[in-house]
Length: 134
Image 1: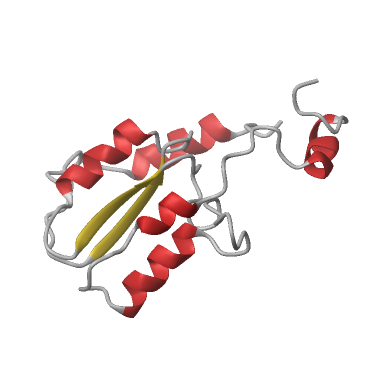
Image 2: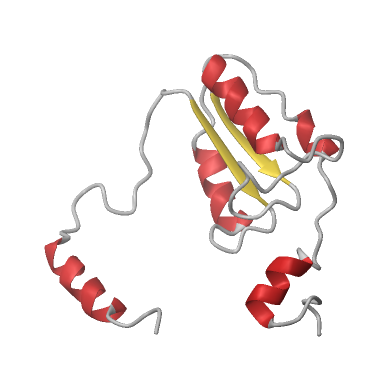
């Protein structure tokens, strides 16, 4: 299956990893940074991401919580009027164009509502039915 060999690999990798004085400590930096996290992120739950947001709060360090986005805020935050554009893309574009500028996160107010039904074609491919809830 998917996880075949996982434990073996983890144990092998762990043998080369030595904890040091940096283990479990977040970096101290004044480097400009943009952090984005969705409230529906199963891989990085908002409770865990909030710790980073509170920690990296220096000048030009911005933490944006995007309601109803999942792990890939960059592409999982489509805008209502222009679904081919995501709020995440807008935020990253702002940051890359001016890392020391203010981030305008109001695009999060213009996102499409989250669709718990999913795309029927994808659902059919994954589950053999066009309805994810059947």
